[in-house]
Length: 360
Image (cartoon, rainbow, N blue to C red; front, side, top):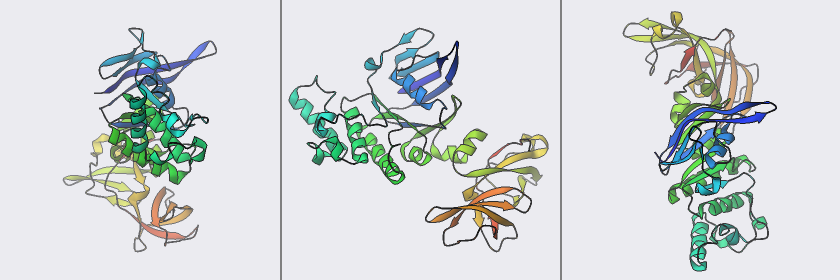
C-alpha cells in the first residue's frame, strides 16, 4: 500500500482535559488512488487530514507513506509537514493576488532553474486547461478556474500525496459536481494519490475510488461508492448515504429461501437476504431507499404524499402508508401529484439491507 493509517487517534486539549477528535482510524490507499472522507460537521475528517499532513500530532497509531513512517505515536516519531512531500489545497484557494496565474503556479519551484521551472508551469497550466490564462491575474478568473490554479500550484512540486480540504465548498452546486469530475480526471492523468475531505455526497461519489464515512471521530466504513450505498456496514452509513428510511420487517423461512414480510408486502427472491436466525424471532429493520419504491397506480398498496421535493427530472416524495410507516420514492416529475393525495406504490428491492430492530 502507498498510504497506510493504522489505529490513528488525535486528541485536542480542552480546559484541564482533552477530547478525542479522531479515534482508532485505519485505512489505506494504493498509488494513484483517490480517497474521500465524508461525514457531518465535527466528525473528525479534517482533523484526520491534518494528522496526515503533519499539522496534528498522533495520540495513538502510525501513518506510513511509501513504507516511510510519517508519524508513530508509540515511537515518538513526528515528521515535520515540510518533510513529508505532501501538497495541500484548501477551500479559500490562497492565491497571491499580486502574482500572475503562471507566477502563482511556479511559486514553490524556486529551486529549479528558470527554464525547467517555466516548462513545469506550462505543463501544469496545460494539465488544468488554463494555459491561455498564464499572464492574467487570479481575480480575473472564475471561482472554478481559481480552484484549478490552486490545484496546479499544489501539483507543480510533484508531491507524493495531495490533500484537499473542502476545495469546492465556496462554489455553486452545479459547478462543484462538474469541477469534481474535472479534478478527478486531472489527478488520474497525473497519477497523483489524493485524499479529499468533503461534506457533499455527490462530490464524494464523483471523486473517490474509496470513500470513508466518519461519525464522532470514528471511521464507520471505508469502501467504494457502490458498497457504501448497497452494503452499508452500519445504521449510520445507511442513513447518511442516499435517501431512505427504516421500516420494521420479519424474516421467515419459505421453502429453500427466506421471505421478508414488510408493510409493503412480502419480498421474495431478493439478493443476500439473511436467514431468520440472524435476528431474534426474525424481526429486523429493513432499509428502504427511495429507488426501492416504484410509483404504480395498479398496486394495491397505497401511500399518502406528505412532502415532495422537485429535482428536475423527478420528485422525491415522502410517503406515509396506511399502517403508519414512512417511505420515500423517486417519481418522474411528470407525475405531479398533490400533497395529501394517495398513490399506488410497490417495492422493487434488489439489495436487502437489514439491521437489528430498534425500539420504537
